[in-house]
Each structure stands twice: as structure tokens, then as C-alpha cells.
Image (cartoon, rainbow, N blue to C red):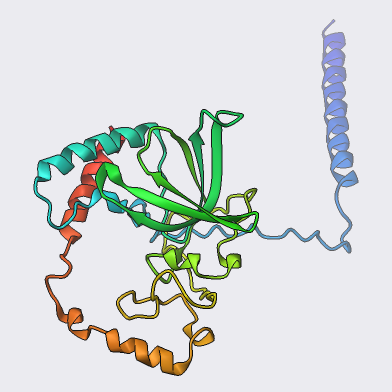
Length: 282
């Protein structure tokens, strides 16, 4: 009986040893089938693209813009009046997104119009002037439609305005482009179906340094005189050197040294900007 049990144990151990060898052979064959040949070069794996992180770009580097109508005029009589107006302006801005734009930017304004077919009217044009303070701020858009100059003066905080789109954000060499009325029509023509051009919220606003060609005189104003300080007109193409020299007789060089002509609003702008940002975030 003991001999039979010993023989059975030897048989079981030999069977386990055979199974172990079988498993090792199967692993060896499976790895050898997918192992590349020694003479085959390895496949090229391109390195991952480097991720460039601009650590100098912070949240504070976003362009700070305070709309000019928030700055009260110099001879303000009652500062409390402009404080109340700013409250109403901020309340309106929470209802309507009034974007950043400058004279020379191309805008599209959608306004409620009871006489229109869709009860709304959309006008596309170039901003040629911004004026007014407080709730009386205005801006003028100009475009050429059917070979006819069309200008619309909008009140910035008019409740009938439904949407203001900035199709192209840029500046011009001058802060007032009213001389486009006397320029060739090509400088005031904007496609009504123009698509918006994306722009960056950081850095400087691009400046369009184009200089327009004027129509023959007479003009609506004497733009060549130094008091207008026009930089965006090619006077050499529409005037003789003698006429340009004669316009310099009306120069007033002493105004350059008038310290009371303009007042520094740097501290006032920072104070109002903080107030507007705080109210808009609430």
C-alpha cells in the first residue's frame, strides 16, 4: 500500500512539472512571434510638441479701457450729478453689452424700428466721431449706400439699441474723421454683410495709418489749417505748396505751452475705472 502511494505522488509531481514546462514554452513562443528582427530598425517616434507658457502674461495684462463718456468734463458744476449718471450707465451696461471701440472702428448697430419689416434695423458703418458725456454720449457711423453718403448719429445709452457689434477694432491717425465727408467715397464704403474680424483683448489696439485723398475744393471745413491738426489727409495731392504754406499763417504755436488747456485725468480715470469694474462684477 505504501509503495502505491509513493508511486502516485511521483506521478502527480511529474505531471505538475510537465504542465509548468508547457506554460513556459507557450510564453516563449508568444513573445518570440511579436519580437522584431535584430536587423530591423526601430520606428521613428516624433517628440511631443513643446508647450510654450508665457509666464509674463497675467490677468492684469489685459487691456484696460474706460469709455470716454465716463470722464466728466473739466468745468463740472456738480460732481454728484455725474456720480448718479454713472450708476445709470452701469445699470444700462448690465443689460446691453457695449464693447470697446474707437474712432475708425467698423461697427454694426441693431436698433428697434417700428417702421421696419422685422421691427429692427441694422446699420454697418465706420465710426467717425464720438462725443458727449454721461448719458448723453453719442457716436456717428458713416457708410456709402447706393453712391450716397449716409450717416447715423446714435445715442450710446438709447434703450432702443438692441446690439452693438465691433466688426473691426482699430484706431486712426486722428481722433475725428469728419473729413471723410470731403474725401473720396472709397474711404467710407463698408460692406453691409461684413463678417467680424477677431481681435485680441491684450496688447495695443492696431492703428490704421491710411491717408485719404480728398475731393477738389470747396470742403466743409478748412482741414489744412493747423488748429485741426489733421494727420490722415494727403494734402500734397490736393493742394499746391503755396497753399500749404499759406495755411500755416493761422498757426497758434503758443497754445502748445498752455498748461490750463487740458487737465490731467489720470487719477480720476483710475478711480472711475475701479468703481465701474466693481459695480459691473456685482
